[in-house]
Length: 222
Image (cartoon, rainbow, N blue to C red; front, side, top):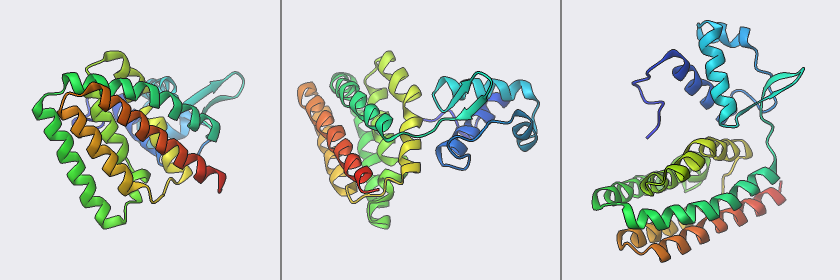
């Protein structure tokens, strides 16, 4: 599922993956200046592959370059997070509709296996880490991939996927909505399995909307 599997293909890709996780998980904090000299020493590489990795991070929106300032990790904004949820509601609804038409029984079986794994993890942590970690996001990732729509995959699995993880990790999205979200996921998979595109889209939109409203409530309490 991830390009950061053990079989990394190039030095720039390896460094890209390592830097991306460090940014997403807050090891490199928002607003931090990107020092090529420090990172080259840290990862034991020359500046050429490092610059390639940094360019890729900028392309997915985790790093921004400013004239006379240089490259910095993006600063988080609650308004931007809510905007992402609005985009997700529309696009992921479409992805669920297309997944219902295109996912075969084997792919649906993998989705169900993913939900079984999530349920087991939820029993261990009370459901909170379902939002803190990549579990909920990865469920959506599989459906987007299952849509077979190249443009949706590009937008949601590359441009926004790690931004969503970053927001969740760094806003500390620990809530009690995990069990409800898991039930909603099961309903979405059932609609996809029945090849009911209308229902799959409706349920996915409602699911993302409920998540957004939950996040809005949490942000208002900070």
